Image 1: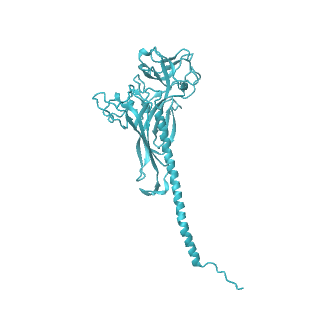
Image 2: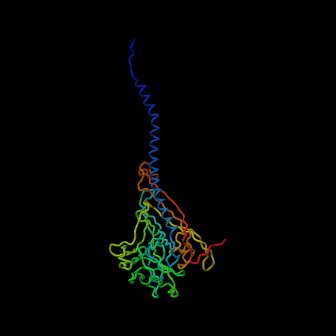
Image 3: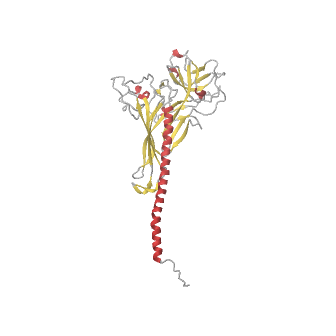
Length: 387
């Protein structure tokens, strides 16, 4: 039996085998690298998109609920300076309180220029919404009467405060007679029986007609919520609170009054912060609101006013509102609010080059728009428009 020598593979055969292996593996490795990059991109985009969607969802919900059980317009000419701290600028005198307070281009936010990466500033909007407190008295009003001086509210006989209807110094209340409305800021309680609420400075209560003194008045507790973007790009939901946020000793005891409205902030005394902030989105580059209005005519001239969208139907919008005077600003005409938000990723994707600067990674951006009906807003003498 003859013996054959086992010589193995030749060098040529080995090189051919390696070449074939590379031909097979190269596309596979390239495909896996592309899949990895796509997965990284998807994660980053999903994070940015969810950031914007969550913010828009919350804003939309609050817009649709704002103004519930709240009068469409309340006269503040009794001396109240309640609204001016909420406008962002505090530059105009306010005569009325509405369920929605617009602020057009009142806040600055730092963002990044796409071309050269330089830091630039955008002007962003803010919006303040008014809500009646549905926790207070289980969503039901207190019922009573107002004195001639407009400084006290007395519960009807047989009614007393309970654990769900506690009021604190600085709380905001709206009083309603069916035809008239007024704002009161709680100042104290002087009745041992817990049936009288004192209000400070006649803060709007004197706008009630004297003839309503013997009529039943309902009282709701209300508060403000403001959406704005700070300079770092955080979209903040700010809930304004009455100071000093401590529980009352009892139904007839109120904490000392510390509310001092200013033009831009609330001064609540040492150690007291009169708002609670929640960051609901990060990396926000722009936030814009525009308003669709119901059709109506100028009181003089008979010309039809624009139905929008307008950027500011209120305090700074006389030009956009076709010369409507400040006493006729179109706050009662708001029927729909458009919201536009633009967000960016928290960091650049170094796996993808920026088209404007190949030395930098790509910065993902995402814009999202929504439109919401203000279902609780209506004019003081609102009538449906017929074709």
